[in-house]
Length: 457
Image 1 (cartoon, rainbow, N blue to C red):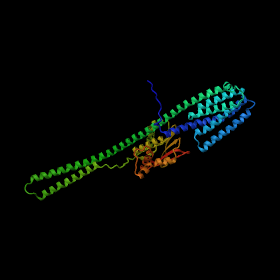
Image 2: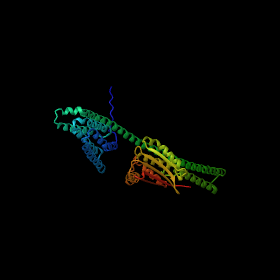
Image 3: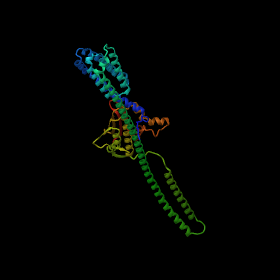
Image 4: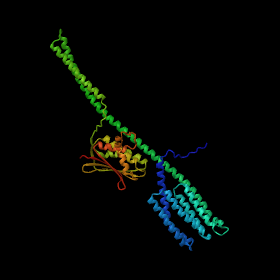
């Protein structure tokens, strides 16, 4: 039974996959371009060794093509060409030059140039990263130029000379290098696809982790409210039962008095009946209060503020998120003030705020970046700073992320399950507790987030 497993690219985020392909291709393109440019003096030396009579003309030709190649590279930077388009022109110029040299050099000196060209193509196709068809087209271009130039020679055995003097070796090695390039391209492409899938899975893990923690905070807050409600109800029930017993005893006393007196009701008996009615009214009043307290479901945020050192809370939040950062290959660094940073806040909501901010800072940080968490104080402020050194998110994008809650409220469409609502929730929590959250994204500060709270002494 044969099992043929093929990697499927259908369920991959195509935008992220294409961006990673371009990033990898641009990286290897820069290696190839600068390697070829810096190799020009080596080619001059080899020309001088193998063809002393005409090395100067070859050196001038290599210099001109080197200048044209550099112009192509500079133009690609200014006009933001795709790396494939840049390489087509850059590699095309250099391969055409090498093919022309092999076609024009005298037959008795052409062997080393064919070998040099074969090594050039082999190294090129084992380094470069672009769609494999361009390597095949480049080789075909070199074949065409070499065969065409040899066809102009007057000798009858010109093609035999071509094959026997290094041309055959070049054709075989260059063809093999194209096959190597094809296999290498497929391997790297599959590796990139797997990394994209892993990153997407990590982001989903972050979202699920964030939702789980949100539920945990909601449960803890609900339990805290239930405890307060339970205490209130217990007090109300205690008061009710105390008065109930008192009035029951009073009623019993009056009943006993009525038993001792017979006949028609007297004024005293009327007073007793009035007292019974009053007691019943009070009992009914407290019963209504108890019922109202049981039906009260008002969702009001009630902070339990207390004095504490914020340092351990920040450290605990960093430890909770460290595993997720490790999965995404993000280096987390923690720098806490050695002296206590005392604040007057609600620990529950502070922990939720820190988790929200750290989770989303990691979510929008690129793989392999550095995330630094600082905590220190000034004369009257507690400062928490998160700095991400890596690919910039952009100030405009951060403005949209941090103001999503406000935008959703204005539009009347609050997206409760929006995975990108975390920054906006963190900002709202900070402001609700009397703090201030600022952010920035530029080359100087990186992706920067800052929280300010009033410190206590």
